[in-house]
Image (cartoon, rainbow, N blue to C red; front, side, top):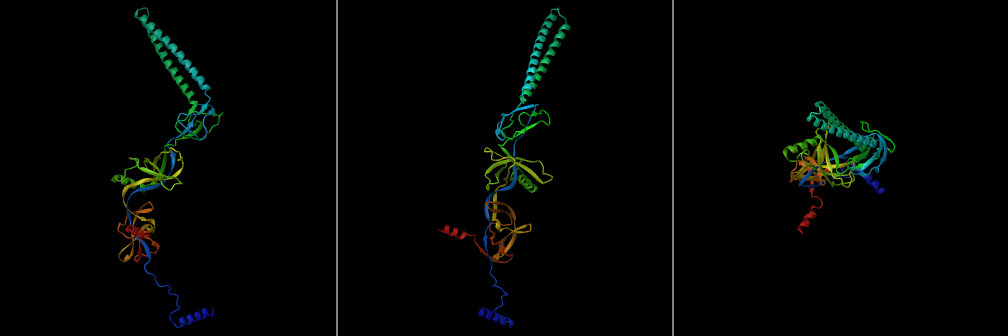
Length: 388
């Protein structure tokens, strides 16, 4: 303790007379050029994919409504099951309609009997008119009776078909193959049918294949349009451009599909345009309403330069990298960016493959100041391994 007090007193005395030796205000000596990792941009042939989010929607959505009135007699499915086209789903009490159909069938038989009689009368009247034992008036009357009887048969047959249709409508079948919802009416309830407000019984959704809807901003729409005009990438309106999809619990994009539709206008409220892709769904993993990520072919295979995303600096809206010049002086250079592919950022413009770019240690770099360049980790080892 005494030693420290004597040392402190000694420093105070030196400071008082202006001698150097105990002034800590200058701090440590200035360090040299900071070390940073430097590498050339990676040149590679790539295919660009544009990312979007959206949700699945059934290719067909059917609301099952009654077409005739009556009491619900039976429900012939389990809520939520897969049904096939033509499967029986509901039965409305058919007995009143069966009686109407039987009555219509009898009316047809009566009309046909009258037609047969009218035909015989017409033949007899025609024969008598030829032998001058019958009059022309009698023949004309027989012809008119025959025509009336023919019309009566046709009307009765039409009434029979209508009655048979009503009877058929009492048995409600699946119009499409898909997953059915829950039944919305229980057995014994009176069903209203054949009107605008007919009773809704249930819904059926088709699941294989399945649609995927997503929205793209107008800048993306303009990009695709210009690529189509230059022949680099055809419009999804004209060709089924490929798409890849990832579900919420998937990192990669393992599901393959293709574009199926692009809307005819940009939405006035959101400034986006809606696109639709279609996917096979044999295992029924995709469900209508489910969110997912999708990648749409942005640009076909082309040469590109790539850098690690850590090499990109930001100055408000401007993106830049540090490029080494003479004397290893770091100079900022503005670049235009593309998407990330395999963990590397696509550089659309601003660099050449021979540029030396700071890829690590960006926070230690000052514009116009020299740095100490170092190769990326593993470069030397790889080189030595190649020599062996």
